[in-house]
Every structure is written in structure tokens, then in C-alpha cells.
Length: 252
Image (cartoon, rainbow, N blue to C red; front, side, top):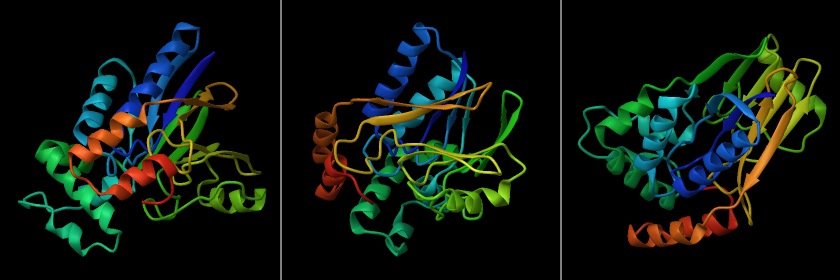
């Protein structure tokens, strides 16, 4: 069978991304044919491997068909003045202090080239899976960055989310960070879950495989080593709140 791999919410978490991509390689050896990869944003912005994550995505794109869009945290980096000498603008954002610290760290570590990579990413994903037209966005169709699609809602809720893009067979979003697979009269609403940004305690790197013929969705989870991320956070002198999110999840 032919599949599309869908990943989102890496959030600068290289060990989680490495684990997810390693699992995909194992599945390919077992006969899964991965036609292409979608990466739905929040590539960077929380954990301390921003440059390494972008390099890993670029390396993946050398040998695979990869489509990447911007997420909320990517946008907060991309919105900076290309000629700015520092990330002082982040202090003016209405976000928690620990997220400001993480975004400043990310801005510095990415350098000009990394920030330009994020600026060059599209906001929306429009593509075909098999014969089916699909639409992808980080937040929601009407609010690409700050919009949010909730998990575990009634069908009527997902129909309202899907209605603005009902000409497509599938809407793929990243904002819930929890896996979603909801069929509506307009089409299917899917969230692949979160690779690197824990939504709750006991998080595993989670991604989705979409069957290119039937559009059926398979969610895959894989463990990753959080201890090495904790040590990196401490070594880089980032706030302890980021360690709390790593182990207990929640909003940044």
C-alpha cells in the first residue's frame, strides 16, 4: 500500500523527530511505501534543537518528496524584521515568559539562513493524495496560526471546521496536538498528533500515515529519550517551565 506520512508540532525536539523518522524507515522496510511527507508546522519554537531540526528536514527533502508549511511558532520567528540585529521584538509579544526565552534562543540559534527558511515556507498546503484534493494548515482554515481545532468533538463541530474548504476531500490540521480522524458530510478532518510538543503526560512522538487510495488514517506512536532533552535545556540555561512541558505536557 502507498501512504503519505504526516508530521506536525516538532517544536525544536530533535530526538522526537529522529525517533519518528526512524520508525517510518522501519515501516518502509516492512513494506509500507511512503509516497511523500507533509510537515504541518511548529517546526521550531520550544525545545533547544532548532537548527538541527531544520537541517534534518532539509536532509529528508534531499531523498524524499517533502512539503512543509509554517506553524504558529515558526510564524513568530518569521515575522521578525529580516534586517534586525536581535530578537528584542519578542519581548513585546503577549506570550508567557518561558516561551519568550525559548523563541529568543531559537531566533539566535537559527541565524539568518534558518530564519529565511521559515519565511520562505507557505502558510497553506494544497495537494493531492491519490486522486483526492487535500488542504492543510497549522491552525484552522480561517485562522492559520491562532486558530485551534479541538479533539473529541461531535461531528457537527468538525463539519463547521470543514465547511470553508468543503471543495477538498480532506482537511489536515496540526493545532490540536492530539490525533483526530473525523468524517463529516463535507470530507475528513485529520490531525496527525504531535511529534515533539507533548500535549499531556506520557507523550510519545505521534504521527499519521494516510492511505493514498482510501484516505484511511493510521496513527503511530514511538518512544524517545526525554532525559537528553532535559539535559540540553539545562545546559542552554532555558527556563525550567520547558522541562515541565517536556514531561507533563500542556500549553507553552
